[in-house]
Length: 195
Image (cartoon, rainbow, N blue to C red; front, side):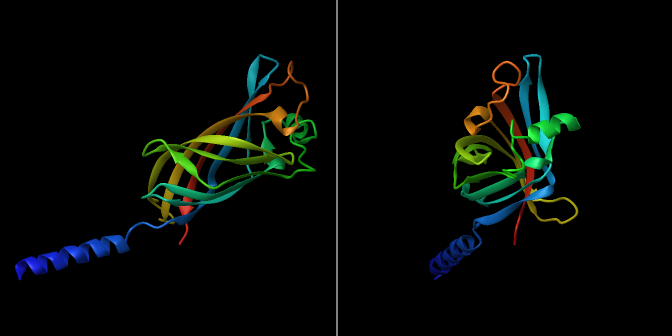
């Protein structure tokens, strides 16, 4: 009888554990904790640094299985900021981002490759100036935990990097002598799990 009771308890415990297993959830980028920065070589002297301030996005992720899907992000091209208004206006022009004709940069992906418990790659489609090209992000998961103050919701911290050639997106102005072709990109953001 004792063995039967023990078996029943064990089965109940397994069932309970299965029921509380983590499920995929929607995570939204926290607009107060997101940075998309870039750098590009200027006349071979030094890299010009810039960032975008209009960024939003979401994805579906299961921390237990590390399954990722439905990744979408948008960046307002007019929000570019290199700390010099004259240069910012030029970057917004048709020579570079063509912000008037193409007000949004978009990224979409449906999954990723896990390399370790905290690192992986996400491959998707990046659209700039109306041109779509594949891009791979190298991603590091910094932390998942309830936020220690404020909203208190489960929050994920992500660092990611990638690079691209602006010529692949139709921006060939001042190549190759004045403005570099390769753009290095750094993303830092927090994402909040949605109920």
